[in-house]
Length: 406
Image (cartoon, rainbow, N blue to C red; front, side, top):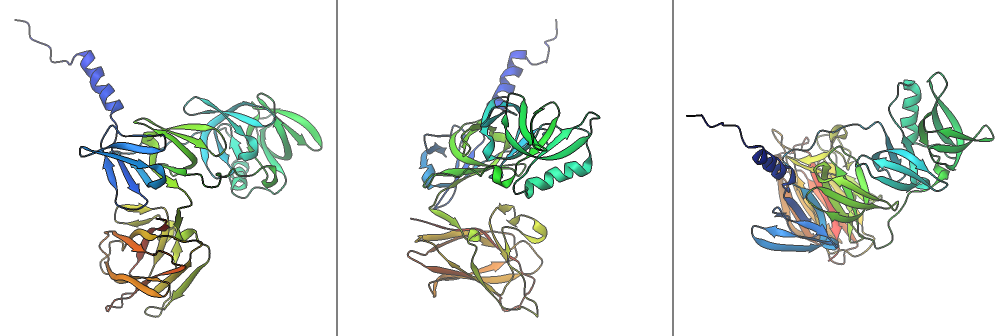
């Protein structure tokens, strides 16, 4: 009798692989007010709403009332550094290489292989590809992107001996696979074949801004990059984002860490520039308040929860904020990173009056949700006080501290 082969059928293997690729990750949805809901596979984001089911119950929420969308991935993809990329004046850095252009736009072929047209007035700069180059000149390119020159664009060009050189100029536009620029008083065409990179001067353009009242999104990728625009759709594979610069991007969902919905109805307290700080030295030392970062420029975190905005403080301190308009609620998460010892008490004072009960904090690495009504308040203060043990080493994180409208 012939033995039956134990090898799986090719069609069955293909079916299993297809199912694995197409499987949709759950989505954690956190509204502006209230607790998070984890949606089962089958959710969608379209036409300004998030729809799906959670534990068999239907779920639907307007993006205007959403705050965070977080794909629940088993593991993020490995990051890669692309040779060709461009940077928008708003700060977004996008993988892609220029393939043409005209007097107003540059055509970039993105990593997704589709071509977008970007007004070059909105570009901070771009690099075509990685090449053997002068390290000092290459470092100069990176530095100029951070602090661009005021009135002179900068071309980084390969000379006849393949050496990378930098030339101040004034870019006039693009003609196919050439950039036209005024070099030493003469208008010249420089081929993309010789061009390594461009940095545009401050006066060569301006950052694109969202229209007043627009509900827009900030997409954070696993590699730390940020993309800003209007969220069009999200499905099991792709996030489609309409950038402020008037082109659409398709981002693989597996590359996305969070999608934050932004509107004028939400204000992060760490974005208020004028904050009154009252610090009382503890055990002979006064500790600085850190804004949007932890110790050693590490991200703010409590246990496994990581926050993009907020404060790190050491008791005894009070932060007082003057609000620009009426808000309904102060929300966020508070707590202390895990440590051998550490404790503190947190209080919220609204227009000079204590609201709610004081919150006891201990260094156990567990975040505590904060939700305090502040309707009509002009000033709010968050006080972090020492406890009876007078511990001066306790660090308190005020994670994603924000005020929201009703």
